[in-house]
Length: 139
Image (cartoon, rainbow, N blue to C red; front, side):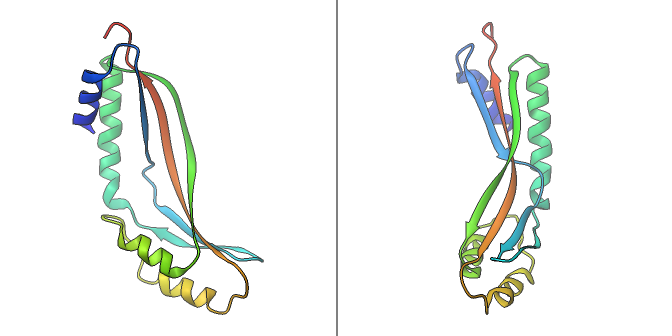
């Protein structure tokens, strides 16, 4: 993030916009939505990535304090990822590099959905942050 922000400041024209979109330093939440209920199953442990978020936040604060960028807007939102089966979640989990799905989660979902008639959704909820910065016209 440190290098990327310095490079963005270098290549952006004065008055140009920078968008920062990234996950919040929180675990993804996993739930199963059945016809009759929504069940919270657990969380995907992303604690190994939280230090990266702290460094990114510190870097942005320093860039703002140095006048390299000005904050124009900041918001947060929830990104939903829906899956049709535990197999889909297993494939998703296989692609995670530093986050960990609890060992009990997939068997729990498989057991819970084994006898379900009709549709169900496995839903991941991930908190996201987005911000718009502007390079000052005189920089």
